[in-house]
Image (cartoon, rainbow, N blue to C red):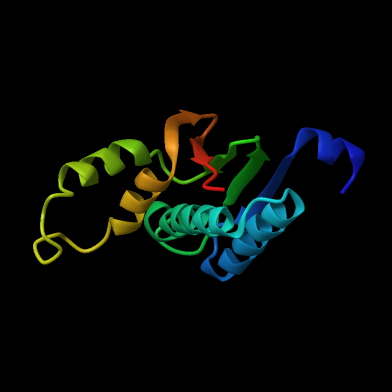
Length: 148
C-alpha cells in the first residue's frame, strides 16, 4: 500500500454489470478490509451489502448482464466503513424501495412476495443511507458501523 493510500484509506474500483464479475466485487471488498484491518465480521457484512446491490443492479436494473459500469468506493474511519455505490442502470431509488419493504416487514414469510429480503438486510446492516440520481447514475452512500 502506498503512503497516499494509507493516508486516504479509500479505494475505488469500476466493474462491468455482469453476474460473472460478482466474485471480483467480493475480492475487492475482502482485500480492502484486509489492508485496512477491518474485522472479518465487518468484512462479511460489507461484502453482503455490495453483493446484494451489485446483483440487484444486474438482474433488476439492467435486466441481465451489461457492459455498463458499476462504481464502488470504500473508505475506512475509526468506527465505520463508508460505501459509495454507483450504477448506470435506469433511475431507481433503492432507499424508497427499501422503505416500502420495511413497511411490509411485519408480514409473515409465507405471505411475503418473493424477493426484497436482501435489501432489508442492507437497511438493517448499514446506516445513514442516502440516494441521488446524478450524472446518469444511481448513487447510494451508506455507512457501516464497525462491530469490533
